[in-house]
Length: 339
Image 1 (cartoon, rainbow, N blue to C red):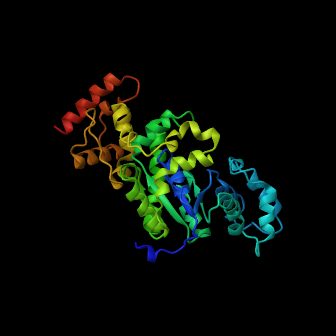
Image 2: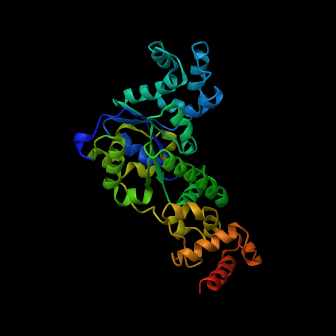
Image 3: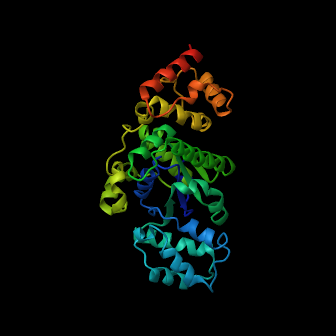
């Protein structure tokens, strides 16, 4: 897209994706643009939308209660915005409704950053794209997708993430598949990028995103870590598990799930994630060799397990208690099927 065709866009930007997929990385990249502000994670939209009947119950009569609810939303204090600041903006409104009210804290945060386009980053909004578009029809979404085996491992390595691979894999499927569906329905609103492509070819991928948003690419976006360190975009309590946002993009964390997870855990994860992995361009691996061979056969094998067409007692014995035994069982199964 040539620069002459680009218009100044003020459509809000929402960054979505499963947990540990690179949403925070994308947030600081976008926030390094001179026009874009992406606020810290806080579920203000979700809380008020749900509490006030999809926002329809927000009005001038209950606005003080609404604002009180807003400032008390978990993590909103990280934005550094007081109720008094919100009230001042409300006084300038021609009409009090959910859309006008929910924009206010984002606009204030953007203005404090010297920016004109406001944005949001929240993994849970992968499940809320339809609701957000119903309020902001011109909203733009950046859906970042990362190999689900890597996100399972990354969650396990955090202090707060689930250690249950079945739970982590199921959540990844729900988040990614929901956003995939919304991207198909709202192709003008949603762009999808792969984390692996972003860290391998950052300038190309970021240019694709800025083209989608209708804004100019800026070199500063590749040096997001400088802006992050300068403006402390990551709340202090989150910095320990977002260390990579303070250094240049690296490919070192791609593929760690396959390399690090035990064969039995990979077996469980791939059984749950098989359709969404394949739909998003990820190869399945054989076990315990962890080699991406015989994709069609691997796909049908995992689908058969999902449908319980394979009722092998050996498969039922695969667990996390004895990796040596699991490896032996898996080797027998995969050698028999894919020899």
